[in-house]
Length: 76
Image (cartoon, rainbow, N blue to C red; front, side):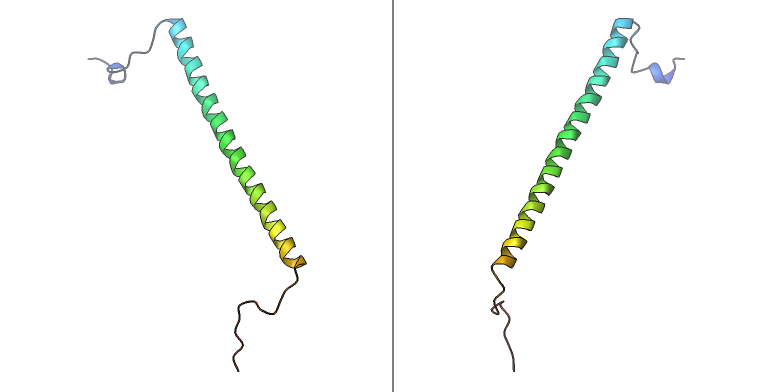
């Protein structure tokens, strides 16, 4: 009876093939890490730009002075 682990997958016996699989695994991990860094950099950049835009809008809103016409209706 064959071991069920090795029925469908035969691990390579050649040291060069094993080394190639190790390099492939390291390459896939490095690529996913770099893609994660790019995603994180884009997210941080968007957050910084949003913070700057909100700060500028708040500063420009205060410098213009508040008028009494803010969309509210006085009811007597």
